[in-house]
Length: 262
Image 1 (cartoon, rainbow, N blue to C red):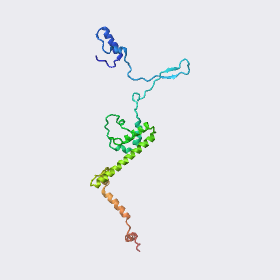
Image 2 (image 1 turned 135 degrees about the vertical axis):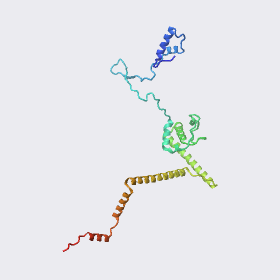
Image 3 (image 1 turned 45 degrees about the vertical axis):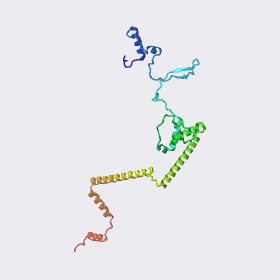
Image 4 (image 1 turned 30 degrees about the vertical axis):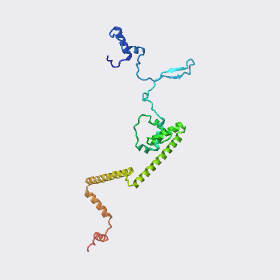
């Protein structure tokens, strides 16, 4: 049986009761007695709680119920933000070590509690690469088990992290020197590759800039004319040249008026 739009659940129960009493429906629906014992609510949204405040004017009544039109905020039905203790520790570590986010990481996990399967009484774990999450879990373990403050646990975990990283860098450098001593050849490092890519990009930009300057000069010459530009340059050059004294004398004599005849 299809329900009309905007049908009231309690109204459906009353209509069904009338159909049963009139004999149109011979068998009760499975939900009939359940709805009769627990009637459905007509309001499908949560209502704001009623506010109470003490009534100081009257001594007969301790509390007075006050109905006020409360304004529901937009976040009324939004679930609260879930925060974990690792969130603040993670924010502090990666703000101090932003380049740790650039290191490759394995994001595949068997379950959400992989960090709880290790013994964080020591920082380096077998089968797990050392990363920022190791420092966070080590700091959390120190705060819970040794009752250290947040700053003291962070300094201790960070000191252990630096020692392991320096030892791994020294081991990698020694391994590279030993390999070169027996004839191994290593390609370009990531820094060299980045510098070459930067130089190529700058060269491409320089070529585009030069072509843009040439096109702009041609557009200016097309609007003003190349002859006017040459004449202006020639006039400026003549004004800068030193005058010839012989020319100045001849010009001055020619400009003097001739004496009158008697």
